Image (cartoon, rainbow over all chains, first blue to last red; front, side, top):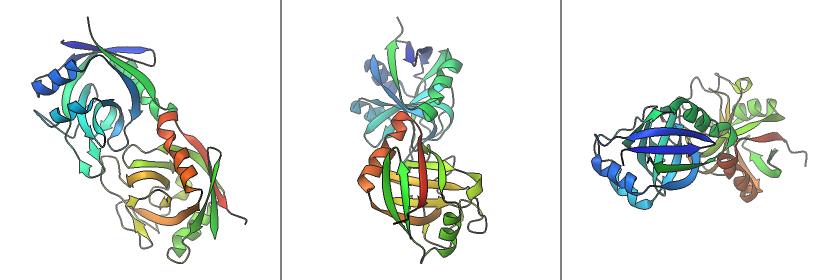
Length: 138
Length: 144
């Protein structure tokens, strides 16, 4: 798998897996696909949404080029109180938990449909959670 | 003095900390009845907030990183009513929360009141905001 498709609120986008920083994290993320869940607004990390990931993915967080800064256009895995989450920023994101900053590991970057997808994701702040599906691109 | 807080059909009652925070509670009460839309915080954890410029009072707190002189709090607990005079915020936590600025820097506010009745129902209503979106809320002086 080299690309993934994200579908949320009727909007689709494509992202390319980015294993340069942490091949292990990307491999573990790709192995967990397809995934369905709910995109919820971040509560500690700023202008982004989070999708709860299988707990096993917590073990790959922090590897490679991990950083608290997750730029718009990228997707990253971060630790959460309950395990791990996929972070999708639509603005400034600095990954935090209650205890303070935590590093996130980048796993993908958008290559198509980014603007429309992130505009829909941002509306979760005003409208609440939305369902999301992430699948390997055929 | 007590406050009645209405959120999403739930009414909770809170005791205002007049003795420990006379200036902040006076300023807070002057804004009542207060209506707004409670939103999920993006930086401060399990808390909701409303921002209203009319609540700004720089005499009580010159900026959000400054520690107020009355009942200062950065950590917020469910049932605390948190007033941030520097930015004009009211915070109502439903779980683990800490007042933080954009970027995650810790900030401060005044703990002006504590919910004493209806806490469980209030927390339940506040918890829905992250999932369903903002809720209208009203704080008024309790006539009883």
